[in-house]
Amino acid sequence: MSGVSIRKNLAGLAPYRQGAQANPDAFKLSSNENPFSTHPVVSAAIADAIGANRYPDATMPELRQALANFYGTNEAPLSADEIHVGAGSVSIIAQLLTAVCEPGTNVVYAWRSFEAYPSLTMIAGAEPRQIPLSESFGHDLPAMAAAIDENTRAVILCTPNNPTGPIITTGEFNAFVAQAPSNVLIILDEAYAEFVRDESAVDGVADRVWHTHPNVVVLRTFSKAYGLAGLRVGYALGAPETLDLARVTAIPLSVTGAASAAAIASLSPEVAAALNAQVDELVERRTQLVEGLRAQGWSVPDTQANFVWLGVGADAPEWAAKLAEQGIIVRPLPGDSPTTGGIRISIGEAESIERVLEALGQAPGA
Ligand SMILES: *Cc1c(COP(=O)(O)O)cnc(C)c1O
Image (cartoon, rainbow, N blue to C red; front, side, top):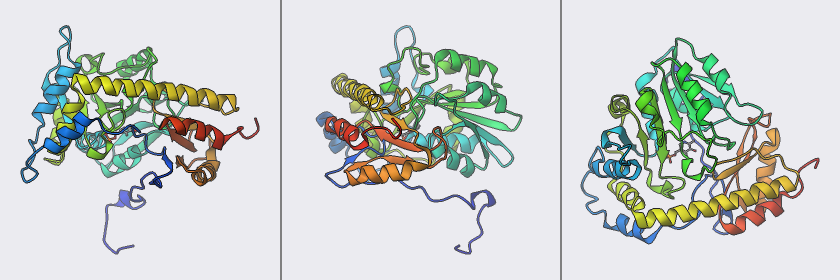
């Protein structure tokens, strides 16, 4: 208690707590980072990003154009105006929610999903409306559609869902947006899109979903597959007028020149090819880990991201502590049921896969 008067709806909010930092000899599998080291071309671009004494170019025109070229095709060209860059895609979620929410409104999202959604919703002044995941650990989209009311300003869909892993299919997504009121902002958070191999998964960028539904904004990031978590750079794709909501509420000049240079270098054909190979490797390790765990009797939801979920419920802290003793840092998330409580294990170094399988051993009761 500081004695300072604060906004009523923030009274219960705790400061952000990061996934545990690991000893140098431990495997840090708690934050879904890319375990490979930074590509030399990217490191060189960061070193060459001169002029730390100068402010960056606020609207990131070069990076937006590089992204437009990267995703644009002859049949489906993309304009830099359809892209907005932020200091991590989390900051873009904050910008969008700040723009659409006010007291008395609500934001609908699945639970359990990304840990940032509840606090970003409350900080924006709205009430979280959390819809339980289905038994298969994915979004219950019919229930989410039914939860939308006249006070709903935004819906957040996370595919693949962090922390459980399942995707939303194109069919499910299309049915949902067709039903949702067109004045409700739909944030399609695709932070792990690069790891998706299931062809039935919705791909908001390939499908240019905002062309048919301008209330949809797609989010992607350089933090996960691209291995730039430490530089803070993410982006949104959407209709220019909808992205303007985020441009209005953004704190100007948050994205650094170094982050922009690293991101642009990462989109170059040479680095992109190297990153694709890393992602392929991580997808193979994912298969190895999921199959290994299932063979040990663990129930593992289908995952299309760079992590797996073990829904151990209230035992999550104990499992995380047990793994930490063996040099494996995972993320415990509190909750009583398998869809709310569990441990999330990121796909990391090759050696980490065997180590995790050894450390977990037979599933309880298997
Ligand atoms: C990691 C993550 C993000 C993005 O993080 P930034 O580092 O801010 O770009 C967004 N959504 C989900 C679901 C994530 O897991």
